[in-house]
Image (cartoon, rainbow, N blue to C red; front, side, top):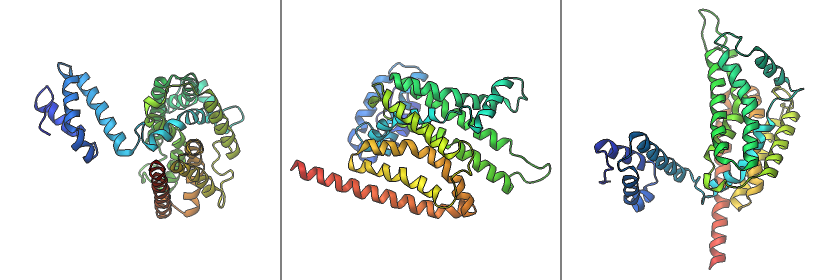
Length: 328
């Protein structure tokens, strides 16, 4: 790439770095055009505007790499699942009768009257109770820009809680930090935060140009599903309904539904994708516990993921061949 954006060497290095994120074929075919557009849009612009343009260009390159554009199957699946994901996040909110509710109530009563070490966790806990409700409301009203902002906030709050768990792990003075009990407790906290991290991340990854209309019915269906599944599992109690084959079944059911996307059946695939963050929470810790550790479970997880990917690829290839045959 020989074209340099205005601003000299630094802008040229930024442009080349951004274009490196694009697939090689796309870069060969349209690299010069992208460089010209970048040069035109950043001509005379300040550093902030140039950085924002570079970020947008890089984000689209990553979408092409991951197949999450508005025309790709992955992007269309995420867009179909977005209102359901917004609803399932709301369904996770702790309600009276849920064991998590008492901790939320305690955090609300204490407010800022706690030690400064506890304050970030308390605020994040309250945020993960309020923000999902606002996110579901925004999705129901079709305010998808607000949904994306709130989804980013959900991911941030969950990351804060996870970080606090890591930093405040129970350490015996003079003893090792990552003892076996600490590792298990951290895994429990991490799996409990998976629905927020996964659902928030998937909402951020959904193509914005496919999210335009209100989706009240799908948000309501997602909220009801999230609430019922959470209640059936027992809220925060990771021992409820989690013996034997149940955790594996809770993982396989939504994964098999997601495979429907390879046959262009996006609604059942979207339902599976929306439920999967919940079943990950319910299942992973129990599977780790039954297998005797995360590393013993890793080979099975890799083998299962590989099998599902190969199956999806085969179904997608078959569907594409069938579509081409119908055209001719």
